[in-house]
Image 1 (cartoon, rainbow, N blue to C red):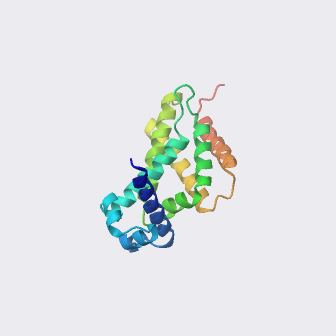
Image 2 (tube, one colour):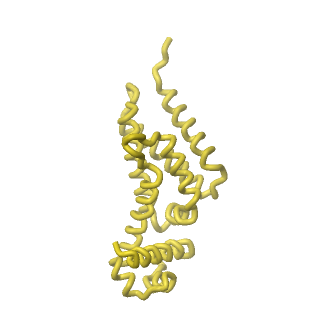
Image 3 (cartoon, one colour):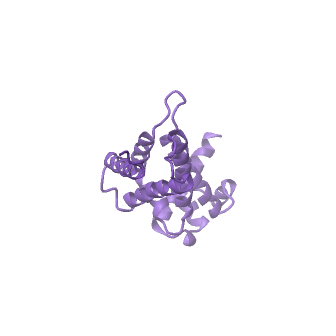
Length: 188
């Protein structure tokens, strides 16, 4: 893609997220976005069908950046669950303004929903690699673990990240291990 196009799209998305911090999505207009991005209305319509398309592409872009930065390892050295969580928390810490806005705005639950979908996929992948204990239903376990991780991320962001990323990951890993050990068969 042409660098000018990338630069324009980035300016529009940054303007859009900045406006989301200030007003509800429903109240936002294309003119508001164009003014903030310092482009004309027509330029926005060259790149996006409407503000709903902009929202969808914004969510996809920021989730893709999160995935590429945090979850992708090389085939030679795959990313462990702990590494992926630590990268995720650190990345969110560094980009708090954007992700806080996308995650906590009541008008855009689509971001949380798509984040949950990504987390479910990650947990499924991890469960496939590690296996699941006898008596545990895969679907229930995956939903529980993904919901716990997303809920903790959301709480952490909504409370202005009161603990460092490393401490959050250590706590989350401890809680997950505790959950798994409670269901391990007792030898006796």
